Length: 110
Image 1 (cartoon, rainbow, N blue to C red):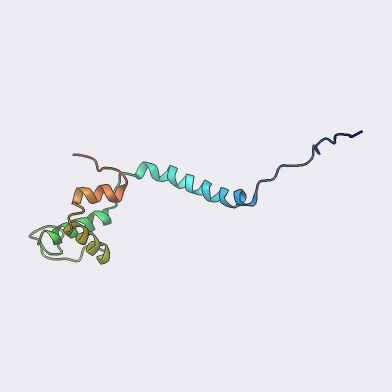
Image 2: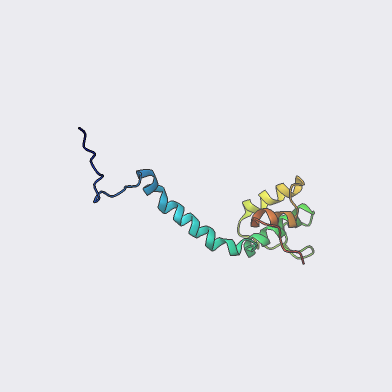
């Protein structure tokens, strides 16, 4: 005759170590997405300044913020301007296209 042994009612279920390790990371990432979602269409002014310098450089106006203005180093990240200018010169991105690429969704139409 066999006797069935009931499960211990005081025993607690434990999560696997991988779940315990990645749960805080997933929670932090979810919080980041929730906070960043409202800002998805906003271009930081420094990025827009770099885009303008790159577009003017490729158009042949030199490294200026506005055509016809004297050259002033108004950008804070020369390598980013060079990279954007290279993409623009290759025909990959226009000023409006860079706004879409940098900001995760199409720029607002005016």
